Length: 261
Image 1 (cartoon, rainbow, N blue to C red):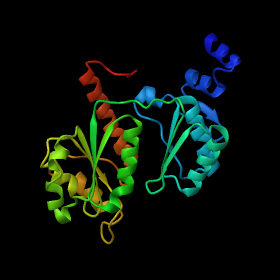
Image 2 (cartoon, one colour):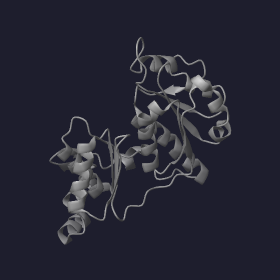
Image 3 (cartoon, one colour):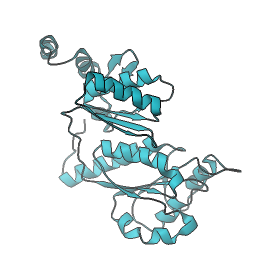
Image 4 (cartoon, rainbow, N blue to C red):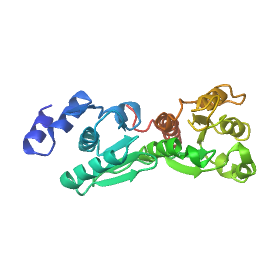
């Protein structure tokens, strides 16, 4: 503790970073950021934008970068993105801010941040273009955790010929996240064709009876072939589940337990 206090007194460590090391979280005006989640649970902490003001989103992103070197914001709109960019332009112009306005993610890296690298590959598959948003959220989580990502898009069951020429690529992956709306059949079809674990990601596309992702969720839960399923549009959860598998594989391939605590 004395070393931490001396580092704060010398200006080498911020109070927020010291608090994060001692308590596991850092407190800001916008709330408490779980700065220890990555070390404790093996996955990056996400900042969910809805329900927060753009200023609160930016404040939490700043706290994340200050305590962990990076920040991951999900479900961000244009106002959230602008608030984050404005804050870092003014306070840490050397930080990189990468926003995907369609997917709704914002990733911020401090200038000296080194992204981890895991010896594992995850395929992120979509049935159609309309499934790109939750699939993109999952892919962002994976990349931020250091997992290699292979995208295979628009291979839904309405035209299975599009899937067959991608099977060799899909079979090379360690795990697949498969996003599908409507009746959600693609994860089941794939599970019968590849010897790769599959996380089904139901998407809230479709309309009429069973719309808004309900039929997709029910179909994946009732899958005859083995599929693990997350909630509707839960791209973050799918990315986290796949990251945990990737970490285990990485540790096994390196013959150790990685950086787990």
